[in-house]
Amino acid sequence: MQDDLLFDRPLVEKYDRPGPRYTSYPTAPQFHAAFAEDDYRAAAERSNRAEMPKPLSVYVHIPFCESLCYYCACNKIITHNTTRAAEYLEWLKQEIRVQGALFDESRRMTQLHLGGGTPTYLSNAQLGELMTALDEVFHFAPAAEREFSLEVDPRTVTPEQIHELHALGFNRLSFGVQDFDREVQKAVNRLQSEEQVVELVQASRDAGFQSVSWSCLN
Ligand code: SF4
Image (cartoon, rainbow, N blue to C red):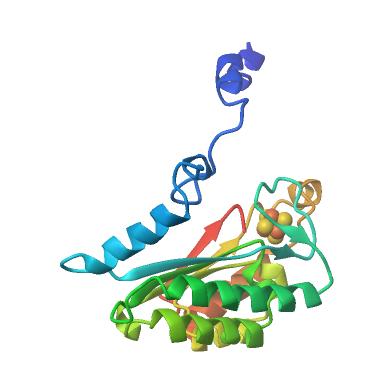
């Protein structure tokens, strides 16, 4: 009887198949060969010619992580070789210039999200370099109009670094917190104490972050 309550076979079978990742828009299945580079360039041009061109929203993916969390379905590279991140940053800056050339200079970037992987795999100096490159090309909106967020793995930052992230221009944070149960943490290969997370949340509040959330992913 108890088993019937705990194990709903039709429900398990209903979701026992790959589904689209819900964290990105458009979701991965909506990318297909029928919408090619020319279509993308034309869409960007149309958006520039709109009567009231919209502000810009940019997502930047930082794919590196120091260790693997067993539940993770993100696009990531597990490595301790930080030179790979430095090399990636150079390619990223080139991509930013290519993308930025598609959009009118009069448009302003109001929304930014850094996801991963682990965005804080990059040092704060590298994140500063990235922010400068984005601002040069996409032109940040005035601070009051911005929603600039990043995903933070609590194992990778100190309270001091949280303050530095705010100084770099971020005003929203999402901490990766899956479970505070030590046994669960061991099972998913992700050990981080409750005290560590509470300390960082407090630092975020002290630094002036407008929004602090928890996610089970990053
Ligand atoms: S959950 Fe986050 S930190 Fe863990 S492997 Fe996935 S992207 Fe990396």
